[in-house]
Length: 187
Image 1 (tube, rainbow, N blue to C red):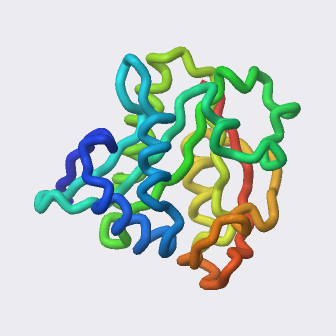
Image 2: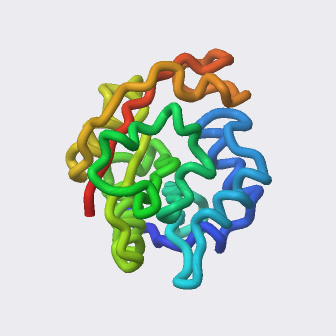
Image 3: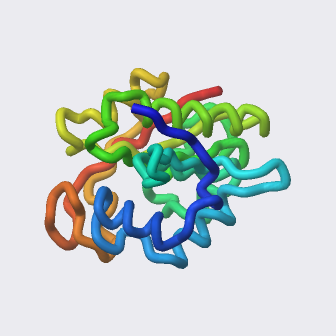
């Protein structure tokens, strides 16, 4: 399956929202969230968040990445085990979201998006990347994928998404009862 990778700021907000509504959950992100993500993902060197498009220019995958030092502007510190990290928070980036259309899963799209973000983060001398993996993903595929990419588990956070007013595509309840596994990769 052919696809191209572009920076997230090249995609209209309504297209991003339609994709995330379908694959993450209705209203997980609103337009103001995307504007905030664009800001937290962009510096003088460019953007570190990417989107995969098929030949019809439909979104088939999205990787939202926050620049180093922007982590605590988006994630409540009670869900961050900074005392367990072997680097300072200002040099840590954050993988906010990765979702791939079901027809494109297991085709390398997620890995390509992640590698593109990692490539850009390394150019910025990022020391590590933290992510909250979705424990209840089918077969715990989220954590397994991240482990294969070199991430290590730090801590389990029950009810991680419960504060977000949306209908989770996984547990299908409000508030979301899913669990996150905090993971880190040192670069």
